[in-house]
Image 1 (cartoon, rainbow, N blue to C red):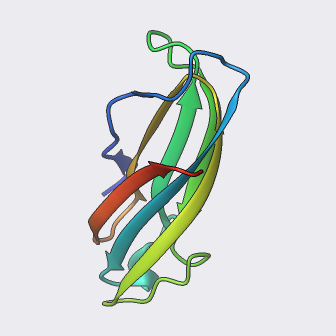
Image 2: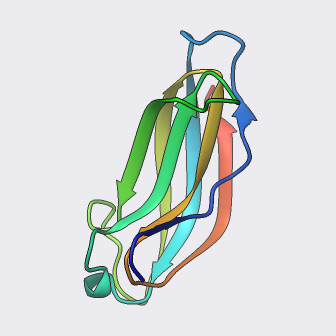
Length: 113
């Protein structure tokens, strides 16, 4: 497949103030069929924030890498990611560029106390 695929969430309102910073914990289990088949890049998850639901001008974006998270081909890996997000809205979801096969389970987002 050429291009990229993002299966993202609906906007999640995280604040009424565009300058406040909120801390979250993103938890999931990820499985990749063949890490070396990801020929364009190894991004597997995407998080972005913005202040306006209409224009969706991105304030922050974070892309998570299969190699940096030490994923292995054919094995499930539990990942916890701490997020510091600015903005009023948050969207997140699986992300893939090019060819590959990922699976996700037990995905949760919680406010860090």
